[in-house]
Length: 259
Image (cartoon, rainbow, N blue to C red; front, side):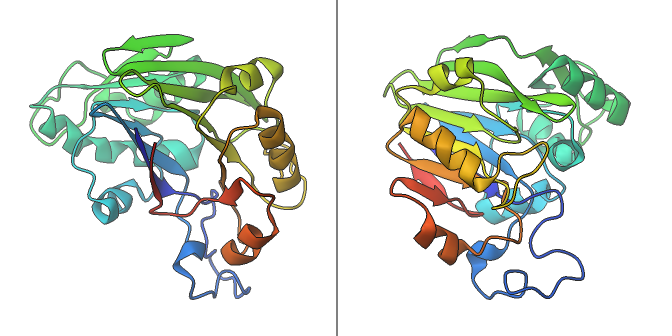
């Protein structure tokens, strides 16, 4: 199993518009954060989680050439706005519609934003087509399983995702955009090889976990390696990496990890 971090930033991105802080002005490429999303390869199956405003540029940067299914964690702008660029992957599927999994809230947002794409196959080559389905608590695939759990995120719920690859047994957790990780989600994450957690900033936030809150959850799950994502310009990569406890580290755009 492989995870590719296409983006690790917030809705404002880093650097931010009209900001001259040390992180926004930093020459360290790890401080250049596009909006958060990941691409996961599980026994050859290519899964995309969320599509930010920079999705097209992220795919070009990381040479993403295949996509078999798409998961929308929730319908906020920084996770859904790039979905129109999924049209190229419909071409690469031979003109078939792309299966899109989401919550009821996410499905409603996709229908509202992309009414022209809700169909079984594209109208013509080069158009998008989304086959919308609610992600079940357990999705069984030949390549492995995807479990889902709901994570509170302000006025909506985010899909927390648990990927288990069939051939290797490796287990990957992706819990982005959440204020807390409920007990059920902690238990589902037990035994994971890698955990990715929302860790917005050092300061508290009403709908995201702060870095101290994410550290507490990471210690509770007790995976050998935890990565923080959805980072703001309040965190310099090198400084944060040096301050975090052993086994916890900040992710960065373009990071690739094979399990």
